[in-house]
Image (tube, rainbow, N blue to C red; front, top):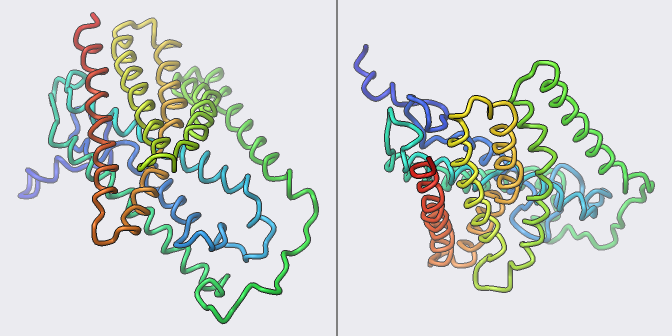
Length: 322
């Protein structure tokens, strides 16, 4: 062992918090949350007046395709990022029952919340910065008031652009599920079973979150996003505890455990969102740059409430269910 060993052996890329490996603060879903937040920032830009798709000119027909925009922001970014799985791993680490080797990892879990929030916010801001760079080249009028869009009409395009995007998405989605099912049937790998079930049930969580978003703007804070993350976190904590209880039954490894994990990944994961969460936090800060109390209370309050109630659901199940 060299002189760095006492510190370096506790460093890893990501870990689930249930193994003998240190580093649970860098939780498994951190990269996905960062990528989804980056894409959200890339699609949002610094102003609502900017074209939504930075890579295309402002008069491109896809700039007015609101269905595509909602699909990317709500479905793709919201489902790629997951508040519930992030919260569940921190709850699992705090409880410590699932990992007798490391025990309760309260400090690592607290750092996991801090790192998760800051990394997602930084990724969102990075996405907006990249969008601004591209707009500067593709749509310079958004920065120069002398370059007006007046007199510039949207280009004509064929009607097929209205339906080709959803058709391509449907084909891609169906192909992905078919490959997962083939991997399950042909190789008998339970992980593929978990994935194809999760793909089938994921739209349920996405649609519920989209419906809850109607509550945003009706209260002093984004109530719809908060409820989506809260419900998703509670559901994920309960399902994670259930899967741990079922793991002692060898016969449950074929269908019960993969199905439970699939519902947690598909419904709870898609119901909750980090990309929209950090977008709202960032916008709150920008509206009150010298006093961001509202953003602080919303962001940290959401994490604290979901952590507390997640522990209240998870701990009794794993400790006393047997």
